[in-house]
Each structure stands twice: as structure tokens, then as C-alpha cells.
Length: 100
Image (cartoon, rainbow, N blue to C red):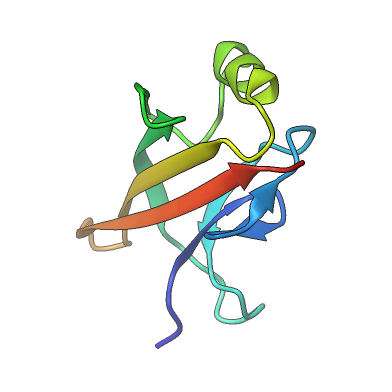
């Protein structure tokens, strides 16, 4: 089975994120199969010091502001809890960096 990935914009774990595209989603790198996982919770660890927990994949304005104010190269760790159609939960971890 293909592995699930966390995307922020078009970036996957280990990549730089463009702060003008902060849309988080969970899915596969391959276009098929289509992921039918629902995001239950998102935890962000910003620059190794601040933890923010959200109950959806939508970043609110305050989170977007914090991310866009980070210095280039700052680390953003993301832990996403997803539920499959049978309500089984799974956690996916990723790490991103603010693009230079």
C-alpha cells in the first residue's frame, strides 16, 4: 500500500515550505488511490519551542501569522492524527523548514 504523507502546500516532510501556501493535507504522493483519511488533530511544534494543537487541517490566521514570521530555515514539526473510514486512528509525523 502507498504510504501516507503530510503535505503543507506542495511540500512533503523534509522540504521547505512556502509561507504563502500553508494548506495542510494528508494523502499519497501518487495520484491514486485517493486518500479518504479524515484529519482529527494536528500538532505543530514551531521552532522547537511552541506547541499548537488544532482540531482540523485548517490553519487559523494566528497560526499562519506565526509561521510567516519565522526566520528562514526554522523547523516546523507536524504530527497529524487521521481516521480511516473505519474510524481507526493513525499518527503521521513530518518536519518542514521555512524556505529561505
